[in-house]
Image (tube, rainbow, N blue to C red; front, side, top):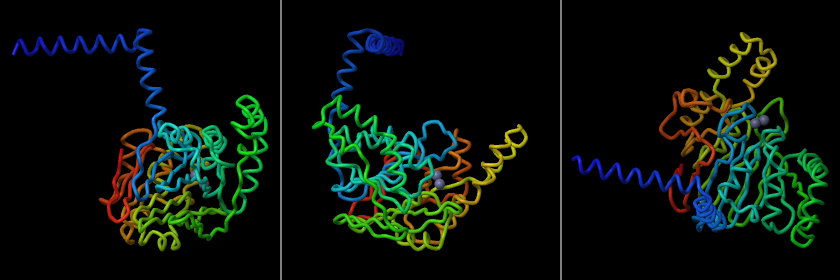
Length: 344
Ligand SMILES: [Zn+2]
Ligand SMILES: [Zn+2]
């Protein structure tokens, strides 16, 4: 026994020493950097035939550690779309090494800042990685104004990058985003992938839409910001996966009381205003129980949980097919199967 303990102690010392050398010496740091650079350049592995869904942002404007604002990426072997790009989400997409050069488009559910803030960053990612043409940004009426504004703001940035890296390497006309407006009820076809836009109720914000993706018999609905409506109920009834915004009334009401008691009048005002334009967790649970949806996953959490206790309050009353998401989570829906695999 003593001998075993000595061996373990010696091994621990060796491993600790190697770790110290690797992290704190110039040769060690260079070795690690070299390995990391090679890993960054590696191509992502082959994609499964089906729908792949990546949570690139699970929070709302209220700051939450480790959570970017609203963003969900959807991939098939042939296509790659991102629904909303809130602040911090482009960083998550980059860290996950999603192929910005192959991004078919960004779909905007509506034009609140927590859904559009990272448009400049995702656009530069696409442009710099060799996207073949301007990045398309789809959305309901109003999208043209949003994109015109961003394109104007980014005029200097475009000129800097084209002149610095070369006009043929980063053509300025590819750095301009292209707005693609669609009606609140619309069907967009991309080969075997169908994207259906349908009306959301984020009143008084208008327009606001949700999106449904259908590919080879698998389907996912992404709400953006909405309360539970009959239209949503119809669209999720035969869907495999629902990704929905969710507001925890117990947390928001408690935060409002706390703000009032602490003299935070403006915060209390806003926490009062937002209570009736997001789906309450109780309503999401009811929707899940009363429809045929395969799985319900909550993102765009209001507020984004800051600790385990808040996460558990969000999970109160969850059924077995409900999940609380976090940034970096994957869902895989293989074609020809009923499976929904969660990769954490
Ligand atoms: Zn939002
Ligand atoms: Zn909103």
